Image (cartoon, rainbow, N blue to C red; front, top):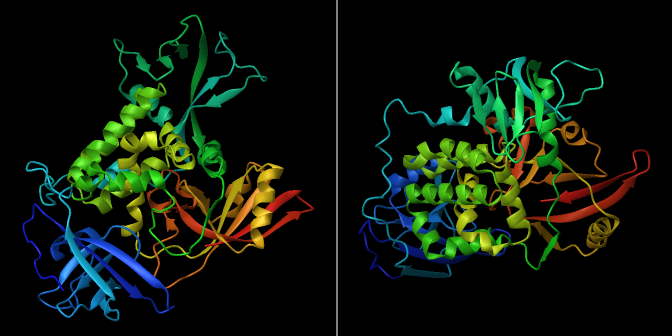
Length: 465
């Protein structure tokens, strides 16, 4: 065993080891040395039963338990349920130092510098939704009056646009009656939106005190957006990022390694990336709104930053679309812009506690060719993966509202040692009524059965995680 480990906080040792699980399967774990005090804060863990005063403590980078320790006798411990539990001695233990894991002198993590009146929960905009809410709508017809017609068709703004408009409406004055969206100017005096590309085109808008049921238009896109093509894999255990090449390559980059030890820098890089992606698709105002939610989080622990990132993912915005498009297509040109945010989003898996076990539901429209791919995979018994983050619901009715031609029924079985495969985000979602459970990018599953419901003419695909 190599005892030459460096306690300089500017440097961090890497530890890798292999052990045989209870199922007699080799498990490979890699972690970065951290102080126990840091890990205790980051993961809300107690110090019960520390292995030994001389043990070294590590935070895992890839698969396996979240925390582990190695004592002087090369016994490996993992931390679960507030207790340290020993494995059998590891078969291989190696230590190394990576010069990329170095903190900036002026950006080291400091978990004690937050002002006493700062509460990150406020950023989540978490609230018990009342029966009455404010929604803004616009007419789908151009250049028509505010007079109501029974044939008028009113379209809702996205939830972020709705908040931008309502916040501006609440602070409007006689001298400031306009608010700018990415594609339109909103005139509160005239109650119209004017196209920024052609100011002769305007549409009537209205403000409505509505019921929560009218928010259901938000559900469709995230719960039925295209899924990535099913990707094969030849093994059931491996790096949890293995089938998310974009995330994996960012972590392995010099900037990515640096950010693993520097939450402030990671947030800053995520903000820069979100703004860049917003500008590329003409959504700079929407991007600015999102990063204002993320900006105050620079001095938080990763576990709390990741909650904000998950919350932002549940918003009806360009962000979840560009993230999942890049992940589905393994678009490595997005490593620098989306890698930091994807890492922070994926990091929630480490602080989410117990994973969700049970049945989940997901709607989708599949072509006959895509259905055939799933049917052919049933007999092969191979593990497959979706490369993007996948929104599912505990409530089957939520995903059946919009009548897609395919329903996925996903059984998340309880497994012993495993990375979390499904995490409940209902309590931090912008829309808790969706009862959302998020599957991480690169989740592994088996296709159990594919049948067509002759009554509903809908494909029913059973998956097992």
